[in-house]
Image (tube, rainbow, N blue to C red; front, side, top):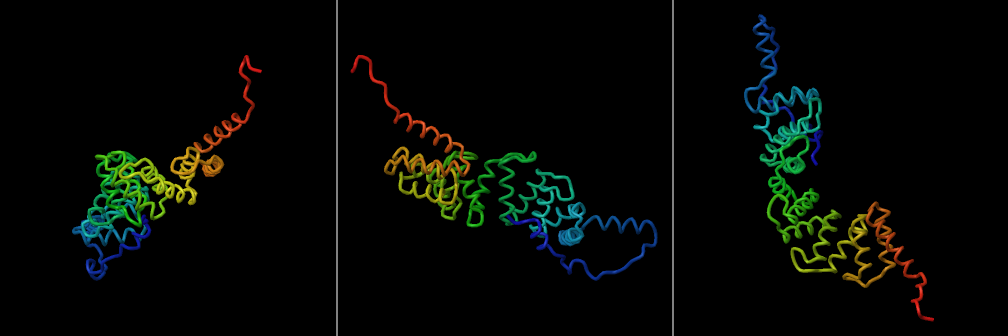
Length: 284
């Protein structure tokens, strides 16, 4: 994610808009009041941009917010800076709905990180933002790429379940593929499950196992759990209870509660199977 600091450094004063500096002495109170008013207002997008930049350099975010809405019309980075200030409550009261609206303006100005941040707010409704899952899904898809693999996973999850629009399992699987190929491990788990069950395309148990292997090797607990299930059931692999226990143990060690519970039940079943069986009555 593009940080507030990097945006701040990227917003510099445009000298052509300011003109040469002059020192003036007010003749009377009316002129002083007019000068003070002029200092807190801006007349055009470039003027707003320059005054916002000066306020940001002075670390006066509250003052900067007076100018950033107008500055948005000059440079979309100003919209994102306003959104970051409001979202994080930097020197002003946090206001997530306003932040979401500024992110939207930045997104419409072509800044992908603004689209990504707006998507998260529209999906979660954090801080009173109006939930709009249809827009959130569209923005997750828009921002899916090598730099935002989490949004590929988010879009795929919504497409798979029909959240925010119609189900599209083939497209979901392709987005899980993209995210998994970039080592976003939770996408490997979800994509592997789709291949295992033949969702969104042909069943491919070998690919499912490969995806779970990749996830588990990367210390994703869910991937290890799924491998434990595969080896315990013999689904697409040769049944191997010892391997099953090993993967459940690894998943448990990585924090997967279900792995711990399944491992304990498996051990109990094994011990029960080893116990001498009582003889049936009437037999010697």
